[in-house]
Image: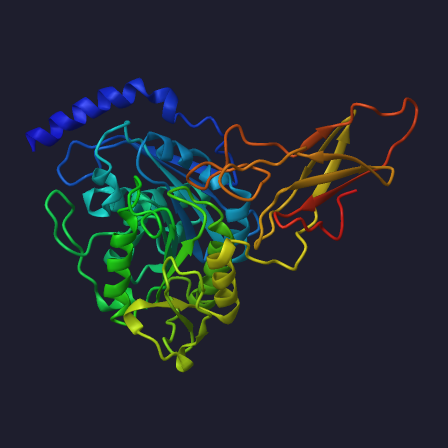
Length: 446
């Protein structure tokens, strides 16, 4: 107990020096809400400060779930959580299913022990659930503390997300584990292994990694990720768990283009799992109604998924997928991450002109996100916003992306100033949305 108290005192002094690092200056006014908790010196409780920001779709009356975006280990990844609730693409998923979007910021000092939070048994589970109660009171949605969770986690956040499935399978609608899994076997210096309850095998899970995390690169910094994921998957799939593996053929430990598979996967799982009559009760999925593919890590040929009833391969090394549409997307992602999307994005709304400045709002395309906007004046192209969309880790995207799949700071605003209006002339403006596969909205804000 005394050693923990001393550790917390040391960490607290370090965190105090890092206040500017983790201070969230983004607004937390409705539809955003935020809570923050100090570090605890009590054994078994979270030894780092933590904050949680939630976005609630303005039109929702009763929440059906909470989409949770959990960052990974290290100061850089922890800081990425500051913008998680402001991600337009993840908001589109939450909005469709009447869910809140919640992002955590565990204020871990650089080089401090990540396991002290990414293992939910070390207090981060309790603080997370406390935040749901407090945010529910703040927002007027007390049901937030009882509705199911759809959890996405990266690296140490993947450990956390998988651990939450194993600890609370009755609460998790689906979980996406990017580049990290919880331990199932004992090892010196590693966290205590988890047991696998039968109920956890009924929770849809996807283990997602980059090929350079040990699949094709056996010597790199992150080469140990694949052996852990492979062992985790085999243990669960041998019990016919609803678990798949998706391997990004391009990326390493960054998140790459994974969101273009994660979105349709979560969409299918939430459509099937969330109840319309009882928001706290999850529908069960049948193992015979999904699709299966034989995993071929590092192979040149991608195994095409088939209906589960037609599968004749080895169960232990197979991939479970929730629907035919997701099975097609999985095969496309596995080949080159270019998940197809034939539909146009939603049109922008509420275009306002003040002087020469245009402002508007827009929702992201659920399947392909938002790459930018085309601005017209008097029926002729005037500008593109941004002029050159950027994303060092995947498809160019309007909000740009951090290493840990959250928008970059400062957040890009939806506004444009016309620098060449004709004096005395009344101009007419239109703004179109463009998604990340290059499709333009059929309608415009005018």
